[in-house]
Amino acid sequence: MRTTITVNGEARSLDLDTRTTLLDMLREHLKLTGAKKGCDHGQCGACTVLVNGARINSCLTLAVSHDGDEVVSIEGVGTVGRLHPVQQAFLAEDAFQCGYCTPGQICSTLGMLRELEAGVPSQETAPGAKPDFTGAEIRERMSGNICRCTAYPQIIAAIQRAAEEMA
Image (tube, rainbow, N blue to C red; front, side, top):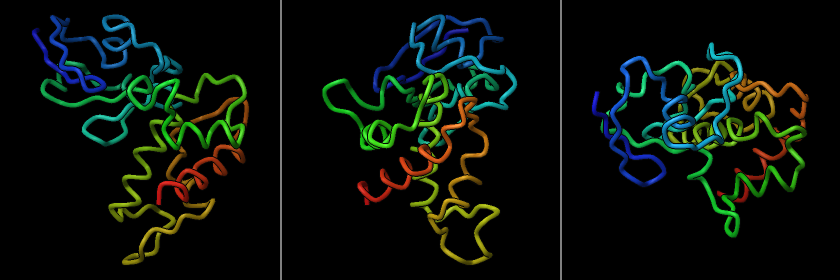
C-alpha cells in the first residue's frame, strides 16, 4: 500500500506491506535505527517515537495507519552540533548506561513534557489539580519506558533538569 508519512520533517512515500509496523518501516525501510526493537510487545518503550506530537510505541502500530501523519524519531530530535535540551540533560545527568533505551526515553520525555504543558493529568495528579513535576509524577508518566541498567535516578534528574531549562 502506498503510504506517505512525514518523518523528521521530510515527506516520505513508501510502498509498504500492510502488516509492516511503524518501527520496522523506520528501521528497515528508512534505515533510521535509533528506535529500538526491544520486546516487540509494547512493554519496554525502547521503540517510542512521537506521532503528531504524542508518544507511541512504534512496535504496536501499523505504518499504513499513519498515512499523512508526522513522525519524529530520535534522529529528528537534535543534531550532533546542536543537541535538544532533553538530550543535553541526559548527557549532563549521565542518564544512561548501555544506551539501548535512551532514544525511547528521550522521545517519551518529549511527549511527557507536552502532556504536562497541556495539563494532562496522570494517576498521581489529584482531580482538577495541575500536574506537579515531582519524581513520583515523572515515574508514573515514564512507567512504560524500561531501563534494564536501572539508571532511573539519573533519568528522573535529567527530565527535571530539561524541564527547568525549557521553562
